[in-house]
Length: 151
Image (cartoon, rainbow, N blue to C red; front, side):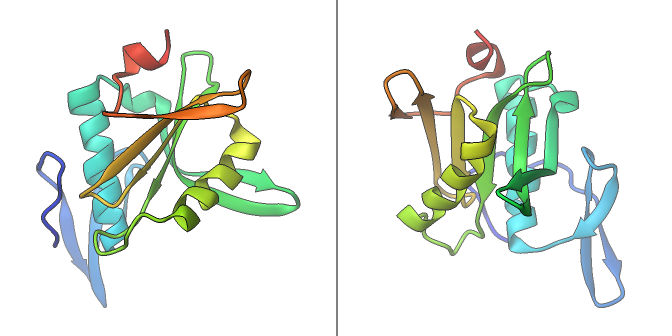
């Protein structure tokens, strides 16, 4: 598939009819292996293995209601009270992360109101900390660990 700026890991990939599928341990099922899914699986593995995120508090393809529309967030991370604390949007590695991409995740965050938003194409990762009191945000130089997020 693609080389990413994320740690590699043992993936479970199978050939299914017209394409490949990758096992998603969070959803506990095989899903179509698209370039975006490749990024998602590697990024979630990175959060769990390197950043101490509990897999049980991460949801892939989490549904939300945006106005009257049903949308799916690529990944949502929750605290131990099951309140969302981070939303992650993935793009395929050859997609440039633009303002339009941030606008998409910002729309999702208008519902979730999480303190952290992340966008990744597997090569470049942007993380922002939201400050709702000051109505501002700050770009972080790296993805915080789970213990740092839930402080």
